[in-house]
Picture 1 (cartoon, rainbow, N blue to C red):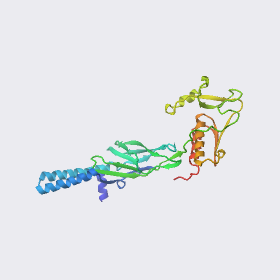
Picture 2 (cartoon, one colour):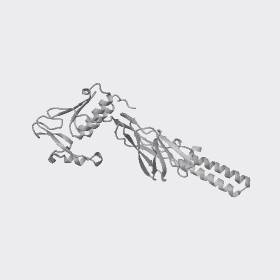
Picture 3 (cartoon, rainbow, N blue to C red):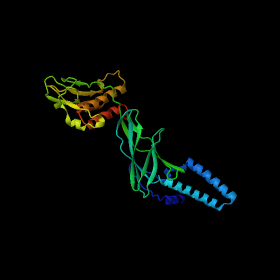
Picture 4 (cartoon, rainbow, N blue to C red):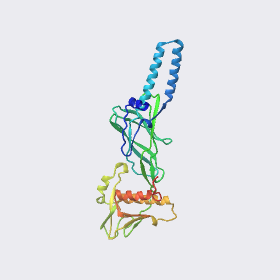
Length: 325
C-alpha cells in the first residue's frame, strides 16, 4: 500500500529495460539529507522552539511552510533520478597508458526534464560529468578511465547523484554497465627497423629500378616530387601530423615483411617483445607494406587494412590473457 502511494506520488511506471539497459526504479535510488539539509533542519527546530515560546502564529505558519518546502524538495530530488534509463555505448580500443573512454547514454521518457545530474565512476579521484536530460530526450556522456596495462578493461560501477532542485537532499544510485575496452600493448619507443627480408634495401629501393611498387614511407629530402603519394596524404588528418609520404619501389625482387614473435630475441622481456611487435604493426600499416603475422596459434597471411591491423593488435593484447575478466 505504501509503495503504491509513493508510485502515485512520483508518477513512475514500471518499464522493462532493453538488453543491456537499466531503468532506475525507486528501489535503486537512495536519498539522505545533505549538509545544507541538516543545517536547514536545525533552523526549523529553532524556529519551532521560538514560535512555541512566544506563541507566534505567523512563526508556526512560516515553520510549517518551510518544512513543507523541504518535503517537496525531497520528493523532487528522488524524482530527478527515478525513471531514467541507462544504456551503454561504444568503447574504442586504446593503447596501454592512455585513457579509455566509455560512452553511456541517459534516456528520459518522462514529460519533465532532469537537471544537474552528476555522473562519475565509483573510483577514487574520478572526474564528475554534469548532465541535463530534456523531457522525452537523451544525453550522451563519455567517461574516461586510465588503462595502465594491456588486456580487457571492464568499466567499474558508475555513480549518479543529484541535489536538484534546492540542494537540501542528495539522491544517488549505482549502475554496473556491461562495458569493456580492449587495451593494446604500448608501442615500443624508439622504434626498431622493420624485419624486411628480400632483395630490397631497408629504405625500400631496389637494385634494378622502379619496377615494383613496394609501399609508402615518410618523405625524405631529395625524394622526387612525382613520387609523392597524394591519395595517402589526403587521408592523413592534421592532428596526426599531416606529414608528406612518398611511394617507394623495388627493382626485380619483392621484399617480404614477416612479423614473427618467435623470431624476436628470447632474452627480451615479454612485454617488450609485445611492444616491439605492436610498433612494427603500426609502422607497416603507415608505410602501406603488406605484412604477415605470427604469434602463438595466431597466424595471418600478408595483408593490409583496418581489419588485419585490429586482428594483429588484439592477438598481442590478449597474449597470455585470453580469459575475460
